[in-house]
Length: 105
Image (tube, rainbow, N blue to C red):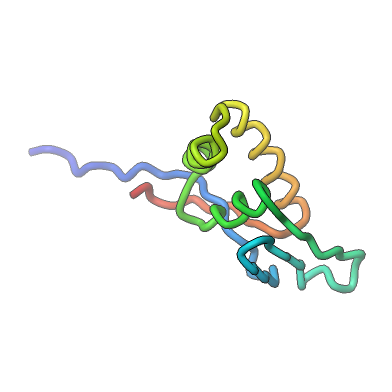
């Protein structure tokens, strides 16, 4: 008898439930509603930053997102990954994204 296959877990990022989002197709505008009483500044993401925001959908890990961005923009995935990680870390510090662990597809 064989043991059941274990599901692989991955870490994924998704938009915070406190984020108010407007995506007009050219840019993405984000405001953290939970921090309105603080010095909350709306964020406007364009170009690669907007593309990253759109891919933080809670379904793909950073490696998959980096590979997709590398293909889209014709750059090296390793270089993209380090920039992507720094950007997502800043979004997390600002309360705009949250980390979850999910079963890989």
